[in-house]
Length: 250
Image 1: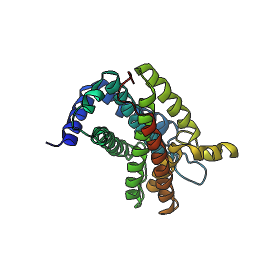
Image 2: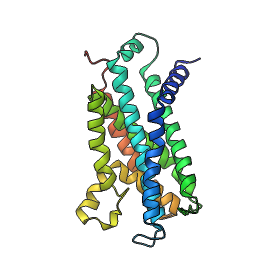
Image 3: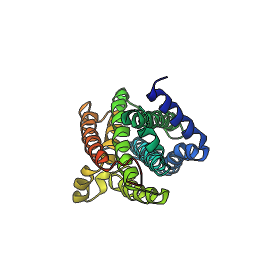
Image 4: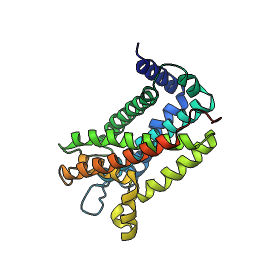
């Protein structure tokens, strides 16, 4: 068994043993889908897009990004605080294998979230309509998870306690949920705020999934979203490399 395989298996088992965390990872976004989907059932937003086709990709993007950021940030903080990283450092296991194992779990979680969430949104009570361009959501999903994992590495590298991780991560994700258009139509925001939202990775994640599911803007919409997410993933990846620490003692 390779070092990467062993680390991935151990990370997965540690993740699924925390049943409370697993439950809320999947249940929390679904709660927003049920609430907003039922309240605004049958309504549409600017441009004639059915509200469910707007809110479902937005909540899904937020839920996947939230899980990726929080999961990686807490894991990295705990590994460093418990000196597990120092132990790994003394073994032949390379750091990329350690981080890639956590990335694999985050990506797998995001895929399961997307399948479960979309399946429920397709129920007649919600009425999500998925166009033939839905496969374009796959690269958006991959790069979205990558971008928020990179943000999680930065948060986990800066925070030394669970409280600090929660505080920093919430300060990132909660405002972004509303300023990126995930919960509130971006077209109804002031022009300056719409422009500002372009510096938020969740805006591109949301737009990419919405365009792919709804067939808006053809291939160009998801392609632009992928480009934006790739840029954010690279920027935060470089920042994570600068803030990474093997131990709280150093």
